[in-house]
Length: 152
Image 1: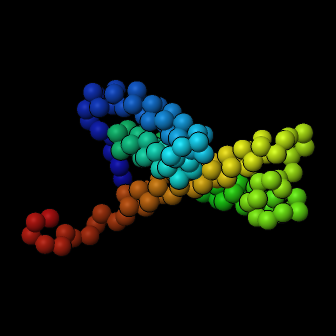
Image 2 (image 1 turned 120 degrees about the vertical axis):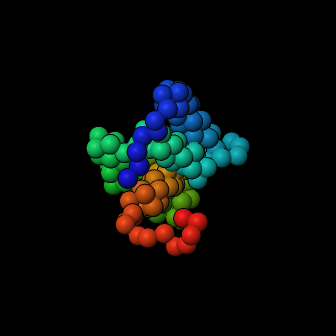
Image 3 (image 1 turned 135 degrees about the horizontal axis):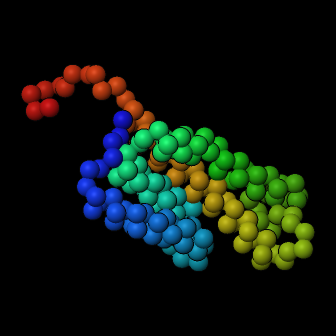
């Protein structure tokens, strides 16, 4: 079980820092095709901000319900990624060939932009949820085990 940090200063600063980290994560996600970044890096930043929130504020019952909802969204990123690829296949092209993405009323450049953006959102979702699930699985292990050595 992860308990809340006992410092009021750390909790107060975290209320300002966590949204800024998440905003930067979304910036990296949405503008990753123009420079360094993208779905993986944006997902890592967003996942890290959520882990930071859990470490600072703990896992009380109301927060654990939110974390469980986030953890249930693990397949959502894969569905978005595979759905965009499937729509490209339905359009008569190759998997993730965004030129064949059939979205009515959009030009080729706009279809490519939305195809890349949706696949990056899918990747970011899976990376963030995986990071949170790793931390949750490590924190919820059995604490009844004896330490393995004199320094523990």
